[in-house]
Length: 403
Image (cartoon, rainbow, N blue to C red; front, top):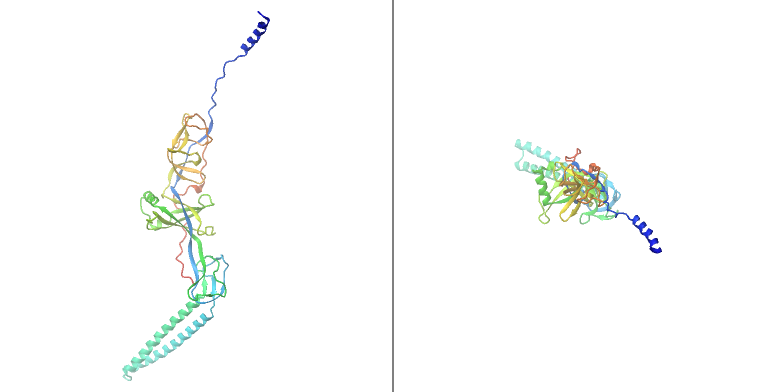
């Protein structure tokens, strides 16, 4: 054996001693995920539609008599009370007309008094056969003419007083008045009624929206009967503006059109809302929560973020009794405030819904479920099944003609 072989033998032996068996793959432990049973709540079915706020009353303030504008007695855009003086037209001529009509009436009454006295005298003489029939007839005709003249002068006095009243343009209701369209000293009402400004009533306020024919039929099917006008006015409505979360404004149904528009296939609906702070202005875009039934139903609620959709429809992941993830097809309902979604079909009270959405839960994979609970929705998210105790806003009568 050579010297080189003697050196290599120990090295080979050492290499053989250092060899170990091959490494085997060790699968990672099942991932830990959060699961929770669906919430069960009594939810009144509703639908979210869109519409616009509309002023309860809008009236143009006009000058109905001719004259020079004497004063403007409000601040543009200011809030005024019913009966407040807003514009004053020069009154001198109209006050004189009232005095003239009053004088003519007093004269006519004096003439009537004299004519009645003469008629009474002639009537007595005729019974005594002292006067002729034609004299009596003339006295009677003069009395009747005097009576007619009194009535005519009374009418003239009313006209003169009315025209004098038209020189004061007052607020027909509480509201906000727009900027004035004429200036002090301008001639108004010369040929036609001159528009001076517009007054808008903001409390209460309407919200108008359209419902589709399909929605109407669905609601009728749910109600099983036709509601009276009084019953409709007690159905609550909730609305929210573009920058508001949820539906913080509460009101009631006020009007449902008796016919469906054949051009659009929709029906006009109106709600009435108290607006004491005038937070709602006419023309605002609004989201309206419309109840589709008068009674609540027991529904399951889960976070909307855990619902996934593919070509076959919507589904959620659940963990079965063997801690294996399964795919469960569901039918969804309305989305509530707080991000909770109503599940109409597909879940049971004992299902453990996967809340972890980081991709660690895979259908068919085993997991370590960590039990948790779903936070209950805020009270505003679940509309009451019965109308609130507060009475609906009282609808004011139509505005009287404006002076």
